[in-house]
Length: 149
Image 1 (tube, rainbow, N blue to C red):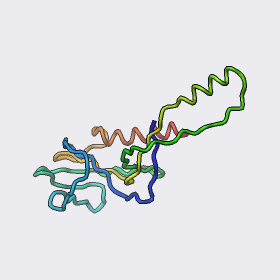
Image 2 (image 1 turned 180 degrees about the vertical axis):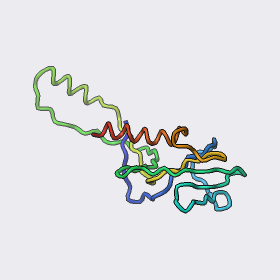
Image 3 (image 1 turned 90 degrees about the vertical axis):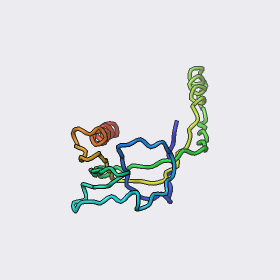
Image 4 (image 1 turned 60 degrees about the vertical axis):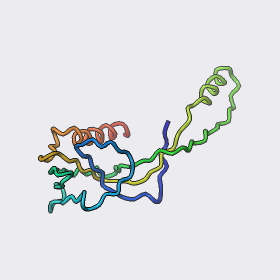
């Protein structure tokens, strides 16, 4: 199981979905030489060049009341909560023993939050109906709304 620990030090950022595979997982010292996206006047379309290829981006805003989070895995484990058992029947004791064997809960630390995602496409702007990432965000929000209420 996983738990999320919110941080007062988390920063705000914009998530980007790039149409490429990068064999690196970690911080990058990006400079304006390598990444200088330009936004249109309406703020919904973007243009950038990455390794000589033109990318067109579409900004997808998360709905009001939702936010994204960038999480970092930690080695910290949430201590188990102990509930006092007041029952004396054999069935209740079996239930209590099975609940005491709950799996450990690891903690994920919140590093940054975001309220919009820019989905990039090669040479063309991603379409809301055809692009799997744009469609996936709207479908995920719909599922989360249905489950939470």
